Amino acid sequence: MIEELDRKIDEMEATLAGMQSAQPEEKILRFQLKRDRDELLAACRELTPADKVYLARHIRRPRIDDYTKALFTEFFEQKGDRLGKEDPSIFGGIALFEGTPVTIIGHRKGHDLNENIKLQFGMPGPEGYRKALRLMKQAEKFHRPVILFIDTPGAYPGLEAEEFGQSQAIAENLAAMSMLQVPVLAIITGEGNSGGALAIGVANRVCMLENAVYSILSPEGFASILWHDASKSKEACNIMKLTAQDLKPLGVIDEILPEPPGGAHRNPQAVYETIRGCVREFLKSTKNKSGKEMARARAKKIRRMDAAWIRIDKAAGEDK
Amino acid sequence: MSSDILEKRKTKFTRMRMLRDRDAAQGKPKVTGQEADPRIAHLEDLFVICPECGESFLKEEVRKNYYTCPHCKHLYTMPVEKRLRSIADDGSIRVFASNLEAVNPLHFPGYEEKIAQQREKSGQAEAIYSAVCKIDGRDVAVVIMNSKFLMGSMGILVGEYVTRACEYAGMHKIPLVIFTASGGARMQEGMLSLMQMAKTSAAIEKFKRAGGLYIVVYTHPTTGGVSASFAGLGDITLAEPGALVGFAGPRVIEQTIGEKLPEGFQKAEYLEEHGFVDQVVERERLREVLSRILKLHA
Ligand SMILES: [Zn+2]
Ligand SMILES: [Zn+2]
Image (cartoon, rainbow over all chains, first blue to last red; front, side, top):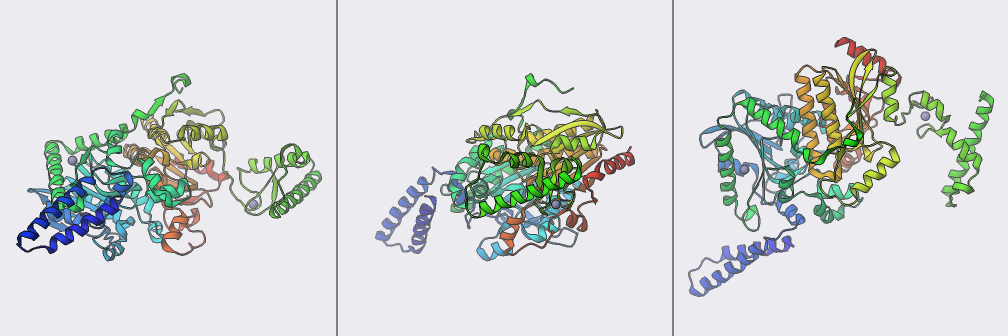
């Protein structure tokens, strides 16, 4: 449903962009067209989980480099894992946020198909995760808060990635991030799939854009594992609980960040402002906390997240 | 049973199985239950045919041989209690964390029934089992995963068992040994399943930084979220011969790269060659090797 709407809105935007004349008739036409477009945008309010998957993967959705340009200054990119490899599907570096030095790390997907292919659609190999870890440890050394942007279909499932220790790289990130003595904020901006997302997603605060999705694997993968039929991905979306609205009550995320009508790509500026507010608030709330406190709070959060779903069977008695 | 009677039965069993396989291949209906030749049924109870080399052996013989094919060393899945007994000192085992229950957090349709079914079938409460025992007189916490229970997928309970064993080992300053086996995430628990990766890794890291010794034994298969969390963090990492270990499964990788994977890819021996495993250890040597490692850290 959203695909159809999204395409129609695109067409109207294109027509509107071509109507520059000051002729009174055209002004009226423009006015009517804008009204129609706004109606369509308003119709984008009621989204199914599958619609959100569509928006989360939208090719024009703002990417980490857009966020970096819009929200930070003096950005200095850092490359390489210092073990012989550089993975461009992880983007990272140091920058100022309203004067405060921070480390930025996130998945880089690219803005068009060519970039997508070059960046493996934002699916990192172990070298990407190792680069991320290197940057995080440096952030810890220099007491810089870490801001993470998550947008990936998952870790890259390739021969080389396996050969160079995809599992170990992810595991080591999870272990190290649980103890990092700096404030860590994660923002899920697009799709966050599997351990490939979580490997840079263990944070003190996890925020999620309204139409982003966060799940154990892609709905296609889910459907093909559970029902041996990848084409049942829509049904999968409905039971996977992958939307921000599903995940907040489960305690997996802390905050839902609103998107403009029609999705983030319809008005990136509005999304930048929302995220700016989110980062500002986070930095302010953690400013006077020690590194140890941040690490302890994060460890506690991870340990307790699922406590509500574990029952101790009293009848079975205590272990001796 | 005297050995020539045994040989005769073995031959007969193999022949009967061949006949039955041929019938099945020709589409003839399978004869089961009451109608089946009771003599075959009896032999089926006694014998097992190795899926790898096709030889038949007395089940008892395979069991005594650490669930390993005496001819080709093919490894059968070892029941968790058997595995624990094969490494622990006699009479030293105390089961741990057996009173935990999980609910269906996402209200996933049919999940409770599925769990009940799996419990019935496997006789196990979950895809994981934990205990405290002694190996040559030294205390250890042991966690054993069971790939036969919902493919050893990691749900909240699996993560909780690992975490609690870790906390227990930390509190009592004893080493932790985990036998890993998993097909990946527990689909029915969604993101809460994924979060177990963070929870278990955090617990292991805390334990290790406090000076705890953590030994991983990879068993077949260890993939997905388990391989990329607590299974990937051992101070010492051992593997059973032939165990498949990796983040992505071979089929997914083949689909991605569009070609066949090389022979032995992601197998224990391959991992040893590529620097991810300290040693590949056969089941019959495992107790001795673990004992030595414990001694070296005493
Ligand atoms: Zn926020
Ligand atoms: Zn054999």
